[in-house]
Length: 115
Image (cartoon, rainbow, N blue to C red; front, side):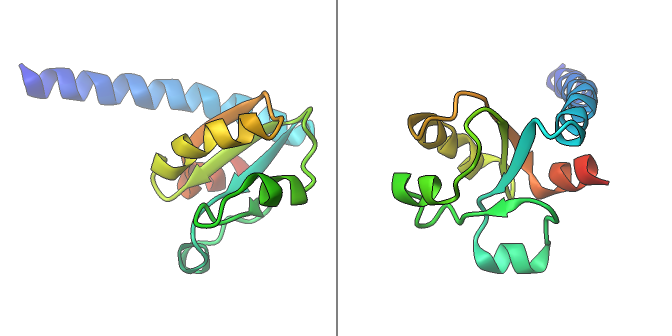
């Protein structure tokens, strides 16, 4: 029973993300969103995320967020290696004045959106 529930949950998450991918892609194409990659520099070097702004979560601060000069009217699509750090960064970004912040989980999702 647990296996069946796990499979169903995975399927629902996949279908949900597929719909989100289209909306995120549309936001980017209409210049209504910005990608923010918060992975470490070694992670970034291994798997680049073209077109995203980079700010390592290790050293994340209000001053560094503000120094990026991102448009607060745009949606921030934040991601890392697996979504954990991106989830933690949501509050920091909202505190810095960004009301529209979405955790898209990982760089693989970003690359799907960009391609």
